[in-house]
Image (cartoon, rainbow, N blue to C red; front, side):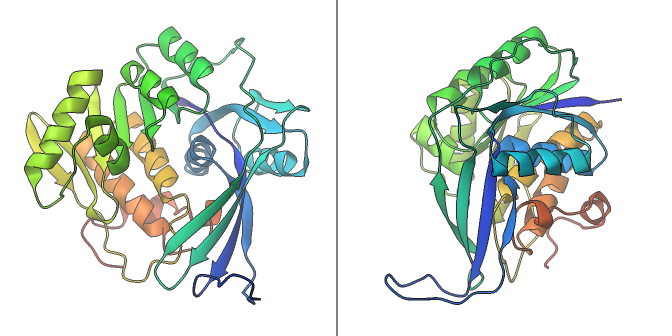
Length: 302
């Protein structure tokens, strides 16, 4: 059986639904919001557990209310949290998310304490797959080097030194359009395939792994056997909230690539999972069921 280890950030999300962006110094009445655990690697771990994978999460939370809620969510879904550390010297990060139902955008206000990294290096788990988000660079590098034959994935959402440092150690560099543009200093025009190929070549030359560039509503880009491929996604006509859509994409990609799906098939289904998630409010409660993901065809409209 696959043994997936997700390493990185755990936070607590409070998502508030709004119909328009608030005006300063006014009062706004809204429908009830959604509260749940968040964080890129934590959300991916939750999705993988929800889809029946044996999953462990490595990270740090504070010894506080939100930290306890995050751990309880993991326990209920079946994620192994033996290596989720609790610190008295650290407050669990919180994100206050304004989800604009008029256009599906979200504005995130993050309250984050000083950095606190995982201290443990004594792990009894032997992973077959490792997913990292760059927020725990030292323990991520330690396990990636210890298990070099693992399937390994990095969620490279933005250009930070800790993420760049880990990129050479993974087999799948799954990066955002923003990361690709900033790192390569190349502007991507999705309608101009050569701009994507230029970014792709620069990244593969730098890190020597399989590169995937996520393109939001335009799907994702990679090259298979030297052939450029834009993998389509679903067209969402009325998006509600894009919170955690990228995390869900990365978790879903990890699921499918670890279960023997082709690169194209894994990306196609991960695109669908991310797209389905934007039709609901919040992070964890917008995670689709596995059967719903495989039941759609990329390129469909919802």
